[in-house]
Length: 183
Image (cartoon, rainbow, N blue to C red; front, side, top):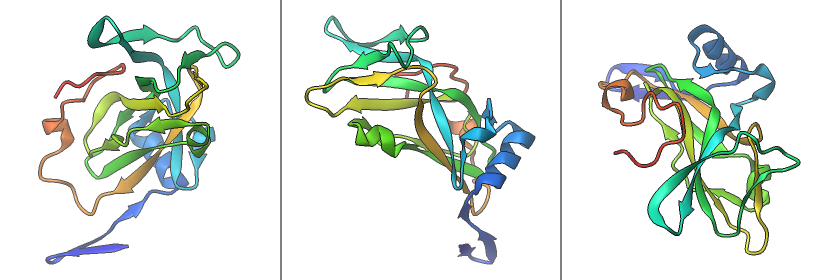
């Protein structure tokens, strides 16, 4: 698609697999980058080692290390429960790329929901993505464990570099673990 604004004209598109790979290899856009996680128009991301969960004793979410959980013995997100989670991957978006997190359809089909806050502005850097997850099932827990495919990132080429990068204006840069609201 070509975007025409005033006298500027530039192609705007979702990056394909080889473009994502080239950006990751050249600029460390995603670390670690695993080419086996590439899809035709996205990159799968994996669940990280930390969650933040609700407690009846405090309105603040409590940080929990799930690194010892496995696919055979997973952390159980009970029906109706909400948690914040993180990706294993760290992101370093250049000023001409933005991206969006999309839950894997296999996770959605099992009853897991993502609360649609997965937009990443150009310039967002040095951070793992925080995910807002909820178990929509009524009677059964969702199984979570580090390294599971949780979603995919869709990368978009910007029509131009913004006047101010998220590197300058963002609240969620350089966060190495799951983060609550800090804005």
